Image 1: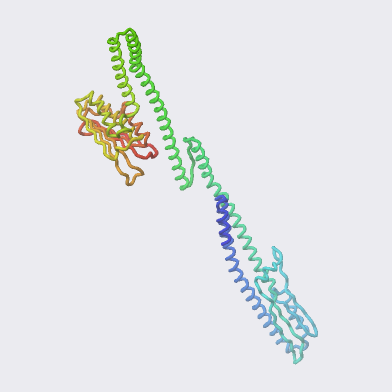
Image 2: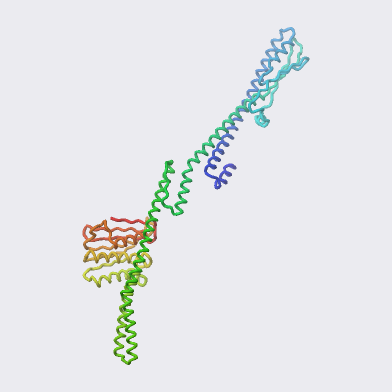
Length: 466
């Protein structure tokens, strides 16, 4: 648990490669601990069993040898030979204790890794066992043969197996770590490329793309990134085009204002200046009747200037939108054409939920109606023009939508694939707000335009053409 906690603690500051290597090492350590516990239990039991078996065999062998000496005349040579026969035995140390002493010690085996560590021998907990066999031949006591187990060689064998296993696990673990380090490094290389590509996208270089063969999971990530970059590039290009169009429109509006001021307002100002000078001169000459004519001319010029200025303001901002609401603003736009084309019937329907639209959405709706009605009246020769503005509540969408519908029963669009300046302007206004635009010639004749505007501004822009 402490290792897991340490790995989790450092996980936030470690790379994925190091975290995987640490996880593998942790699993190997746990496996080694479990394997060591099992090996310890088996090894301890095996050494004890081996020592007891060796002691039992040695005791029976010596007892049988002593039994055969009962018929011998002089047993000393046979006793010495019996003890000497255990010289070099792996597990037993044999001593003859009596008038004559003889000892047979086990051979001490060597290991490639050196002597058995004291801690390992103590952990097995196998103590030497002893058996004493009295030697009596012909009723005479010749001493005692002591048989004692020596677990060193058996412990050394277990240690060698443990060391070999440990070395094998170390080599295996090292190879796994190297493979993980190399494989994860190669696998994460595309992620580094993706991070670099994201930095380029953040710097505004939307033409950045990721190529090459990748694993399935990373290839899906690459394809998603490339689609995102393509959409960002398209949005950036569209924004640049809209900005350029906006600047052009601003310059056109300024040029039109300058021309109107020069052509319409400036002559009236000049006339007012002339009439003012003339009226002042006539009043000084005590000719008030003639001065009154010039004053009336000034009043007429001021009324003409007010009318021209009102028309200019109407082009800049829909009249009545901020003061009275969307319905009155659209009625003012329609009134302009009713006076000039009274033979056309106009129907206007604005839902109550749309009356409070006085921001950019309301202005855009007025401009769409202005452009669409102007196109219908000037080009379609209609008898009926209908205008509808409705608001629909959102259930699965992220925002409410305003649907603007303008239709007529005129000649319709002659070339649906070729847009005039009016429809291009409407399309750009709708696209700038993230809306959708549909226009077509209905089967019953005429022309129908439907613009759907979101009250919130989602991205990316979505334009639909027939």
